[in-house]
Image 1: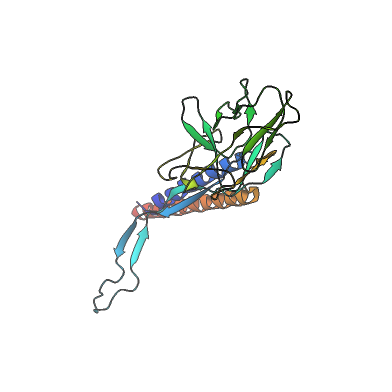
Image 2 (image 1 turned 90 degrees about the vertical axis):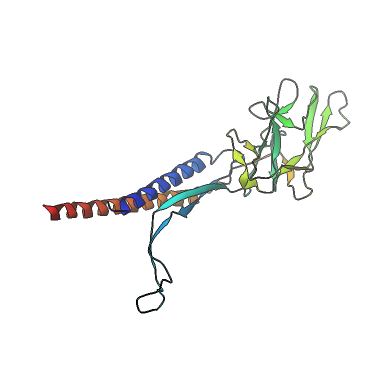
Length: 263
């Protein structure tokens, strides 16, 4: 059996994964805080038919060995945490991180997750939550009679209430979390990440300090997906897929020719 059939099949499978990854990037072009993924490849094992540097019959060293590869595989896809465009929403509970860092979210089971999506809301108890109702950690409660909410770049949350319209009261402080390797975070959907051994342990800090970004109230961070680049990647993947199918057709024609010689 001609080896190129199997080699080309690995190329087709790899390019299909690229199309799937690109489709996910494009589908999330308007997702708040979304980070695009980039697929990386590795070549597969090589069959050495003549080793490089082997001694020839004349006693010389072989300068050009003969190795035939077995195709390609997906090494993985990496999240690119470049900052997206900040969009002004004028919503006092819309927060964007200008720089590095994540908001920490607490799930109902007590586990923590991390997000760049700063589209927060207030639940029936006055607590600041995500659009799914998950609590922001550390928890912040807004009084029921609040007239206005102000959030400083360092995460200080202040309110003016109807009881004291001339007095500003601090009701809490936002913290941000950073990781030694953000690309090692595992995506869980709902704009949430969970830390892994590859990401390293979370490091908590005050916005604007120790390398953490600052808070921008009234803004949301849009995805960092470049539509033009994704379309180019889509075209390249499609063409590479077609080239691999062409190699399979050529190999099939060679097999057909071989069969004709037997007759």
